[in-house]
Length: 92
Image (tube, rainbow, N blue to C red; front, side, top):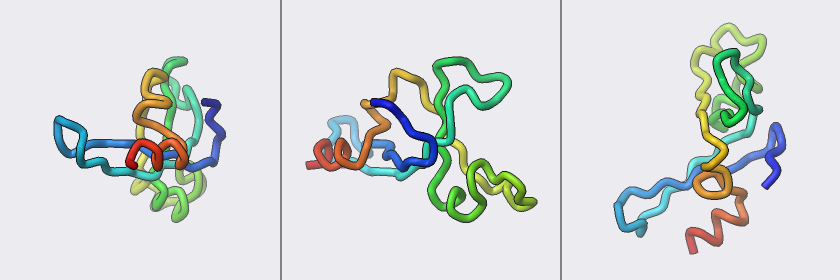
């Protein structure tokens, strides 16, 4: 799966160990290896509320300390980070 900057993806999480109670968290992909200390395997996503409110990574916003950035490893892409179509399939 090729990720596009600015596109929305979904993190699938489960509340129980036998994977019967899924939860979806929408996230916007903001880039790969975007911080000085990140490596090639690090992908960054921003919470949708902070993305809409402050823009990508809060650029230019003084109040942007409220942004939510989530880190994922390459191995999580297509497993816990999925497209909407993949999320619907997984949940059903």
